[in-house]
Amino acid sequence: MSYTYNDATMAIAAQIAYLDFDDPSIGNGGNQNIGDLVDLYLTKYGDYKDGVWELNPNKIKSKRDEELFKIASSIIEMSTSEGGSEDWRNWNVVDVCNDQNNTGYYGILIETGDGNAIISNRGSEKTDFSTGWKDWAEADFGMLDNELTAQQKKSQAYMEKIWSKYGEKYDSFSVTGHSLGGNLAQHMTITAPAAMRDKLDHCISFDGPGFSDEYIKAHQKDIEKVSNKIDHYKWSIVSSLLNVLPGVNPKVIQAQESFFKRHSMYNIEFNENGEVQESDRTLEALIAGPISVIIESLPSENTTLVMLPTAVETLIGLKMVVKAITKFREIGQKVKSLMQNIYYNHIAPQVSGTYEVNKISVSNLSDEI
Image (cartoon, rainbow, N blue to C red; front, side, top):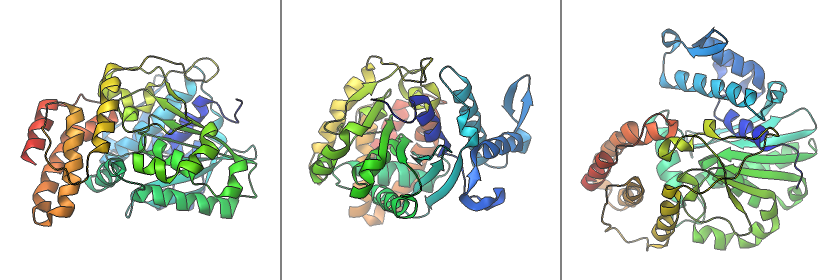
């Protein structure tokens, strides 16, 4: 099937959602040229040496500053690698939904200058504990035993707003996102206003997790109407969690690195036409997928699980933590403190793809919780 944008272009759009477009310090409040913004972050936080942008520690005042530089650098790298394009330099973000202080959701509407638009959803973040908690515990783990998460509800409302405000302006809408953002992209496509479906061009979930049984049953009819427009690209353990939507053909694609470093968007390998290349499923994905489905099917009241020293079993422990907070509020403060330890020292490095997870330490902390 022929789509408006190739895989590499959609991947860059997914990465762009991790930038901050409604930061008043950079002007224009959410209506901004992407090329200008990327250049601003590169010059604000780095130096150009020997044809490469390098982070300048003396210009960094926060973890978010460093993260923004890395994201801007990755967009440059993705667009100049095989199959890439610098068309994004002429794109403009014309609408932003920043609900990070509430549900944690962040989405943008990108005008690509050809009469079409891309809706891009930000994935899980590690900037601070509050944001990480909303993304990892409430959104990612909230998908277990749940028909709808708070971020899915917010993304659906944003899709309705986009159609109401911009439906007549663009010929087509494509939807994308990485990790949690990939799951939200699929949800937005499934629950898009009926009148918008004819203008939906393509949806790509880049390594996003799947959905619960409860979700699929609740949205079965709508899934059938749009499943032929959805691609679910998988290359790490994250995208093997929970269930693939019926009618959607998941494609395992080539990516660099292994295990937890693998989840990063930087690692996708495209061919000369900007399309992903198929690959074999990794061993960890083969193991994690079935385990996550078993976890998802457990009764909600089940609070006794044997913890094994593996990262997958840690996911089980975190699910139990979320349930424990709602049932035993008096121990909430202690749990939060322990979760901060796990998050900053183990989960956050995993998302950035910088370090391997210390599985024994995580298991010990989970036992303590």
